[in-house]
Image (cartoon, rainbow, N blue to C red):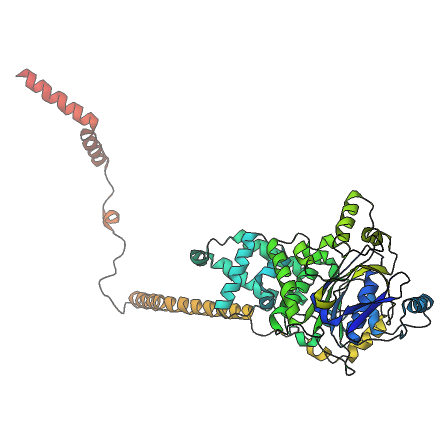
Length: 521
């Protein structure tokens, strides 16, 4: 089958070849299983198959093992013997070691080309998810994005948003009349979350030059699809950043790529390792967006494959969109594990040769229960499949080889240096400087008349003191008291008697004297 990817051998003797039809590869898929059961190798051989078919691939490399896709396997490797035996068992006659065209990417710019996007491209919904904001805080974030859009201020990096939030807090009284209450406490909480994100290295993710999606969809000169490997080992320390970035990438692909209907093969395939991180504590609005993207992005020619330990990690609405499935072993140590195992088995078309539930429990490392979409998109009957060996190196690439690939890449000159163009931070800074300059000029203008008046008064005083001008308006301290002679003792006694007679005691004396006179008559 030229238009299919060889997965391995199934059937009683593992002689029946199992394929993933490229025509249905954009119907998405699931790779699940417990730790150590072979999920990473399955991801690796699928990436090899898509690349060989001319389909670019994006994979997140959580453990660093997938970097081995850039190097061919070796006959000197310790697993060469088991690999050749397995290839013979499943009828993989053209098994040979081969390297694949690889491009390394890294959000932190350490193990690959830097991956950047702008805050405006991410939008408030995903950013609120990344920052774990409350509903009220998300509302303020939406106000900030609206104001930036209306004011023509580009939101590119974290300092743009931080400056805009400061301006929002300073002008909250006026803005609250239009947008509702704007709490300084909520603004402070958002600023603290931005600081935490910045300390985690998230500041390097926001900025320019932003990632060009076309650079993920390139092909090598020989026609093979480019395998884009995102270094995610350090990124796993910030699971929110990891999940939000991958969801943003899916959203960008959905918005930018044109409709292609049902192509003969996908335009791009996306592998999302540790998929449970996307859905852990995710609000319903975000889960709905993931389900919408998964449902509609296939018409853009993009296939999405989730890799996780248990199918129950993926919400049912999303799980129902995943037509191609590779289920490695699930261990049933607890009642909850047994229930999850039973539910996983019920999602497959039964095979009369064996019990699906028992097969999922019993398959060994490198073996899986598979079901691929067949003619007209109908799910295939479940089969126990021995997964084929990889053609590329099993295990991580050494640092020197990775550095050599990065140095040879023509994308280094495009993404290596960050660009800081005029954006919201600079606009607000210019406005603040202009306002400060206007206030200073107004203050100087207000001080100039007062200064001239004071100078005139000082000049007049100098002329008066020099006896060069007398206007009659200058009057010194009153000298009436100083010119009067000192009071005598008699004058003081008269004043005291007069004061006493006008007081209460004086009135009583007068009434007594007058009363005596009238009684005498």
